[in-house]
Amino acid sequence: MIRVMSFNVRTQTPHDEKQQFIFRADFLCSTIRRLCPDMIGIQELTPFMRGLMIERLPEYAFVGGGRETDRLGESPCIAFLQKKWMAERLSTEILSLTPHIPGTTFGLDQSPCPRAFSSCDFMPVDGGTPVRVMNIHTDHVGVRARELEISQLLQFYHAQQALRPMPTLITGDFNALPDSEEMKLLMDHACLRDISASVPGTFHDYDRKPPQKIDYIFACQSWSVQRVWTLHEKQNGLFLSDHDPIIADLSSGT
Image (tube, rainbow, N blue to C red; front, side, top):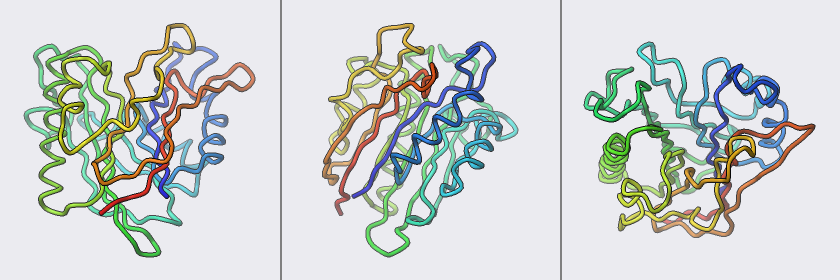
């Protein structure tokens, strides 16, 4: 069995006041340690936050670059359990017409924020079937931008499957509801399915808004799914994030 998590951890910002990441970090990391996912697709992780999580979760390694011109800033990072997995063929692509130039965007209706996705192939330490994990955070403003970003992700998925096919999981904050036009690109895809379809809304803005389903885990058809759920917890008044993580237990196919 493999346990994967998709988790927008909410970037560090003083605007969150008592819910800032620096105050949530211990609760967040202890929850990850309790759940012990094999891989975590993390969104909104800055270098400062990454350092805190590495310090508190030494059993995990973190891969994936940032979206800004210096390859820093927020990153669509992938964390993995080092005792079980080895990372190979890591790639972080900027979502734009120039995917190898950091800091670029599609323009059009996109926000000023560059966007990116990371992909990594994971080899089991004790042998067995390798697994590919892709993690994305699409634009929060532009519908057309999200369509182009998802299309780029799918092009990369097909190119990698043609080069080296393996069971694949896609985690991410897509900033779009399941019935939106841009999500149809994934929902109607013959090779992929939304294994998180049954989970309730994930983004709640620290319970200030009705939950919205904008976070997902997609899987190629060869996966067998045992369980998928979200986690909405508080400790001493602190939330894990303004998003609830999605967790899935699966068995890999061939």
